[in-house]
Length: 67
Image (cartoon, rainbow, N blue to C red; front, side, top):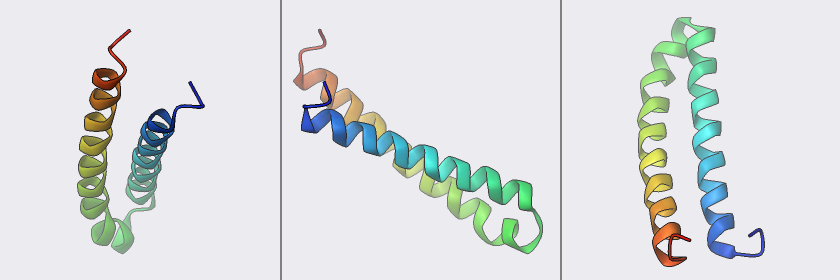
């Protein structure tokens, strides 16, 4: 499965979502001005990246036949 380029794209998109989520959690933990400045933006980025990841996952399953 790691030889499939579409799978690699899906995997990268999931890792990007994870990275954005960890950045958002870190900004919440940090608090203060940093949290006020970046927390809302980070969660918006996460929602957009998560939408793209879900679309890619569904596309992967649809293209590969769901088996």
